[in-house]
Image (tube, rainbow, N blue to C red; front, top):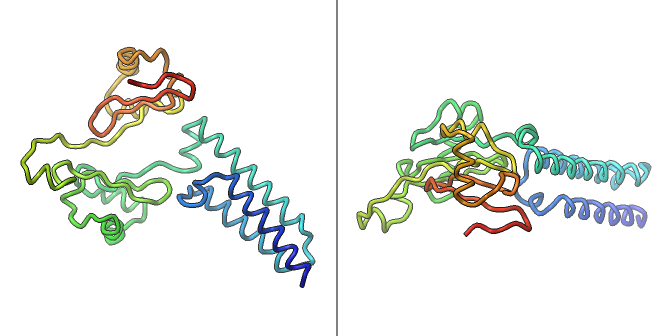
Amino acid sequence: MFTVMFRTIILYIVVVIAMRLMGKRQIGELQPFELVITIMISELASLPMQDVRIPLLHGIIPIITLLFLEIIISLLELKSEAARAIFCGRPSILIKNGIIDKKELKIQRFNITDLLEELRLQGYYNLDEIRYAILETNGQLSVITKNETANVTKKDMKIPCKENSLPIALILDGKINRKNLKTINKSEDWLYHELKKHNVLSPKDLIIAMLDSQNKFYYQFKEGGKTPK
């Protein structure tokens, strides 16, 4: 009995340490590869606890191996957009400009009932309030509302407003996203011109640059660099 208790305490500590080293995101918003690793760790920890004939190291070593695998994948994601797409996928736009994309719903195996339920859970009851609904890679739904209905004050007070657009990332961790540039019909020359306007010497100096929902150029320097004014 004391042997089982001792093994359980050790495995519990190992699993807690592993989960902490994986980062805070592991606690809540899991990416697909993180969910797989979490399930595998729980299974590996339960076997030596249930069967004392299995050596304790046979549970600890695979857990540590999975921990290192998760860290390596996370580092790859930080350095490569292609790796992010492979391991996490890409966000899917389910509602675009107020129109439900039935094709994308089918691809994501997401029916209308599921979509409406997710919208209600976030406090949106009318589809005509929504401009974009984006299914994120962790399975959560992000919603961008129409400006005239985002707050009661604008529509009720008849204040003219410009509709929100979908934020587009142009530079991630110093690398230019050429696919997104093509999506907004902009060239690299245009991007370099914008960088020059904001006194940015090179894309490599930025952790992110994007066009926000108001179509404004937003950027942020990497750690240790200058901050935008």
